Length: 482
Image 1 (cartoon, helix red, strand yellow):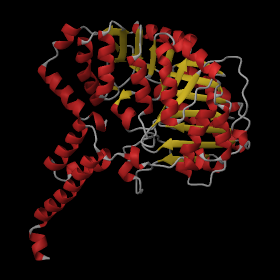
Image 2: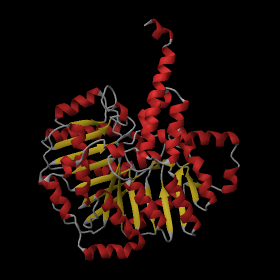
Image 3: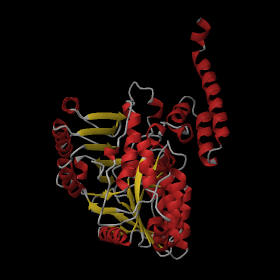
Image 4: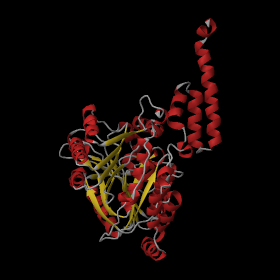
């Protein structure tokens, strides 16, 4: 024991490198991206203890090991029948493909990746900013007849959050089923409100609680989705969380965001996605009945797919869809994102597309809500400007919308940022919409936002100080941890 006490640090260092070398062997065996693999190997070998901690929290590849099993939901007979009913005939698919031209590659891509099926019978309402979203959402919640399902990254019991939570309590007291899956890191609800929710019969479960939990090692993998399903008939998805930050009547800083309300067949896909999450967080024996999937007969026929991705999926579904949409553009690509910290595939796609005389425009915040994210984003802009991409910085406030429009026929709205975290770490969901009318509305949103932007000039941007560029480079290295 005296030898151990006298040589404790030497022993710990030896143990550190034994574990580190084991981790290096694991990294090499997994055949990761060379740059990513080398970064972790250098960290493990050059930073004793700290390198192990970083790798344990951020470096493990859960996409292959599966954080949770969705088969309990997907194998249920009701869900299988619902998925079968979403199959389209050849004639219908051909009509959509004629509209989309090369963009039609997205349809089989998402189906082959994750069995995400194209739905046609949908009515879509685009929502600009939180004030409009909550007005619609509160009305739909008040009119709920059977169930209300919510899955959010951020829910707070501030002014707007308390209004929603109190309304959910009221509906639960009326006998309506209310289920809430909230991210344990992003959300903040007081003990008093939690007790009120429980007493009212609201079922609320945290997604991957990180304190004193077996999932602490996966604390970096968060549920970034924003989903609401009401009576299986109405669905919401987009960038707007439940917090006063998103309501401009209450928020000191103007917050620009985009969301969407869906009525139709695509709500079934959102419902199935919610149930896979609920099955994971609740640990209860889940029996799904047909009442959660009512028939729809919408007046509109807007084709769309619900795409989900996360550490539980075999492929980076949403990132791949964005990549294909960009590389198959023939006229223009308009992107709005609050965090632009992309992987090399997306950077290359944007550069090649812009250099092919296709108009590529990107809106990012001039001032972010994260100092590190802002500098990491800025580190990528020069290489885009050099390729001919038009970059605009939003000056009116903070732009949190996550949208893309391609050639006026394809658009996407969802929770996915154009960054490493959304592509590889978080659980995300996007709606991919194949419709000229919706694309035109989103294009108008984009052009309106350009009126509140400053366009970057390459020569001026290159004149940033060496100190600024160094800070950006350091922030960029930290991108996987953001």
